[in-house]
Image (cartoon, rainbow over all chains, first blue to last red):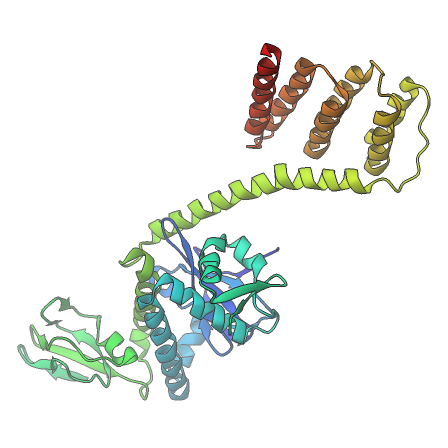
Length: 163
Length: 265
């Protein structure tokens, strides 16, 4: 499968992305594992992680039909002077960081389950979480744990939530 | 701008945080750390709505600016504001695995390691397994094309070489399949297969060289000869930097060990 990534990880990008349509999978890396850290959905700002080091530390995998606006740093700075935008931006930050904080305290298994569920609800292309993406990311073992616990199942090349 | 004299409290312990403080001048402290000029206080508490776990006081005469959802971000703090968000975000995203703030060089190194591992897997898929299955499917499915096979082995050899050089692989496969059936007792296979292997190596076609090895195993009876072909192929793979050359070495030694055991009996 040809995976498409938004330019972020390890690269200098002069701005962030506002997701108008679709889902993007945020991936983090550690010594022995990679993790689906967050599922970005319509209406979210993507790539904010780049402001600390000036390069992003989250890989952003495009998984369906995505449409986004690129907001340059200059544009963003202008927007931060707009009270309406600031209010909206804080509202986004509160939801975003609360979800990230909640996921960071969950077990790996629960966090993955939540992210699969979110992906399956929000993506506009696949009937479930595509096996091709799981294989590409080498995450089969983590998904197998959820299959063995009967939380998800595989059907027609995608992982679905067991009801 | 709000001024705080030395010792004055900025936030009380367990208090609800209704705004983020940005230290414009001076310094503040709590029981754990200091907040120097140009730092934010209560950022996470405000965003995630949880109380402070210790009081915060000015360690010298200081000035702060309060920010909340109803105030625009002042020009001079915009960059720092985004950096603060990014810092909080990275801490939380990487907490489950690292339990500490991620260092740039470490994370980039982790990703490189992962990529190398993937590339290794990809190599195996592309160079060995995939090529094998592709050629195997080809072999199994390429029986529809109608080709006439010459009764003379020399002519048959010329036909084969012509098809391979002209990249007519489906014809080549059908021809060789028919040839294996027709010329079962032919002694010149050894020379022909050696030439075909050299041609596929010159063409840098790993699938074809692998395929020629399989045909050699069908046709040839001489283990030493088969092993010499495998060895030629492994040198080719090693030169092409394909890790699968080691498998070919193992195959060669397995053959030797197997026949050594058979000979003993």
